[in-house]
Image (cartoon, rainbow, N blue to C red; front, side, top):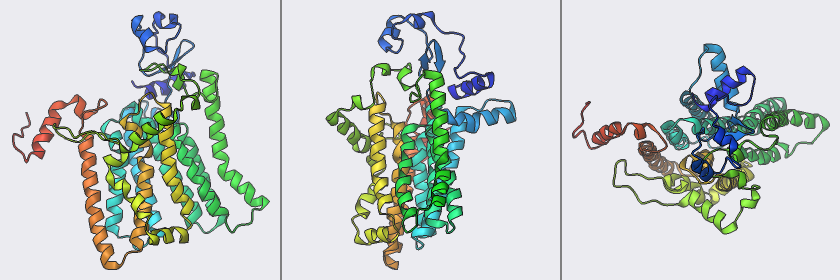
Length: 439
């Protein structure tokens, strides 16, 4: 059983720790059990990548998925839900959110967008956002997919509340659900939950032209109340485990680095090193492999060059005019800045930045790309728009193909990592069937 499955069982037993009965006395005897060199020197047996505090093991990954999926599944079926299936459920709900959000944006801001281009971009951007989780849907990706799933629906509810709903009372109801899903993302993966900052420009748009009365103030407080309630519950949960309301367990994990010695978040900030790490996050390059499937993991913008489109599209006067007309200026600006903030958090928070951390921002850049592309399309002449739609649809298809090839890279204990023979069969299929066999 995986950590999420075990934590669900722990909750049913009435405690917050994972009840292992094989705690090594040598681990308890160490002055600093978080030092990997000390553990190796003492030949300590321990559970990898768990938080360890006051002689007990805890899960430091976000707890919200336990309440959303693992416990309900346990109650309904009497069986444990595997993390693989949980990740797949969150990924599927995320994809539904992408298609729903993009459809709503198209109806609200660029009605001329063709159905074919909408479907092509929605599919490609869904693949970009979750290909890694589909490839390696284990423990780590459960928290990530849960967070991006909650955030995409949070964006859907908030944008609908501000730009689509006509009645103020209806807007408040949608904003409440936007707050709830956005707040729950903090209990999955906090860096992704920084996307809640997107709410600030939406509030400014909503309040513009409205008189801030006591009644409206109460309604806004009601809409924002999930942030307060969920935040308070998460702090209580952290305090009950680690005697610190702001400690999720990151400092106490048993892994490749001693994060108990990291100090405060900002104390790790070194301007040149951090800037270099953020640049690598977006534009690092690794030469292509001579082994199938040939692709390698690069920075975000080199992995999927289609995500560069907003940087060129924003230069168009027509796009800027559409942004002003639709009151999207600060929303677009925030979609440029929030990925940088999340990348900044990731490079300071983790001992090393892995490919799966790119999932924290892929979906945001995809949303930005869809918005700017749609506004650009809206300004094109009919004949030019058809050509643009055709070219971009082909690019979206090629991007989807790139996702499939990246899916096949043996990495992080994914399918092709375990089943090398399956990768060989797939290679032969791509080689036009030469040497293909079932056995």
